[in-house]
Image 1 (tube, rainbow, N blue to C red):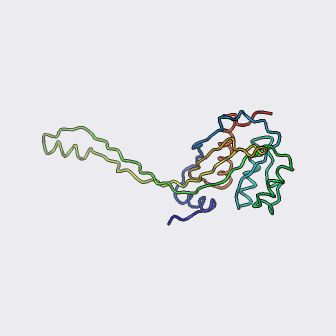
Image 2 (image 1 turned 30 degrees about the vertical axis):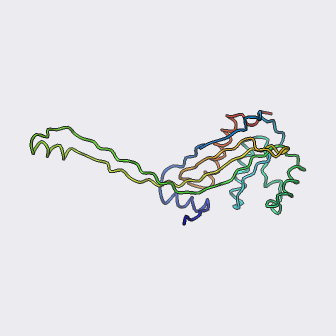
Image 3 (image 1 turned 180 degrees about the vertical axis):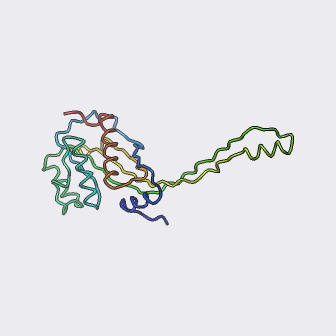
Length: 203
């Protein structure tokens, strides 16, 4: 049975596995082809996490990168977060017309086999000593198995008024070195892709 790791456990495991630098990439994204870029007046920035520090750091980053986004933790009481009807009423009453919602969906360990390579120094095979010299001049890299700690995060953009998904994405972060760095990277990559695809029109 596969065990489920928290983001913080993944951080520790990654540091034990490898001293490699972390790297975040956009794996895929989707945009509703029927929707033109929306000009939202007030955007709610949400990062769904039971870790309050992670949530607040990510929502602050989203708010700063998007410009007109408000971190959800500053306006929605924690007591109603899990109550769909109350949260919905609160968001609409507060005047939000757009929302960016992100969450961690997987923490995995990916195993990749890196094949070896052979290097041969040409020499004569016609005599024992020619073969002897060739064999000693033959070097082989046997290959190895590489294990990568990977955190996958998805990001969705919604139009609040019609409760419609207009854009979705998924990122992967390899070897996250800290929660803070993980948050910085996924927000940077996600927002950059949103802007590149012109998901939201400039104000």
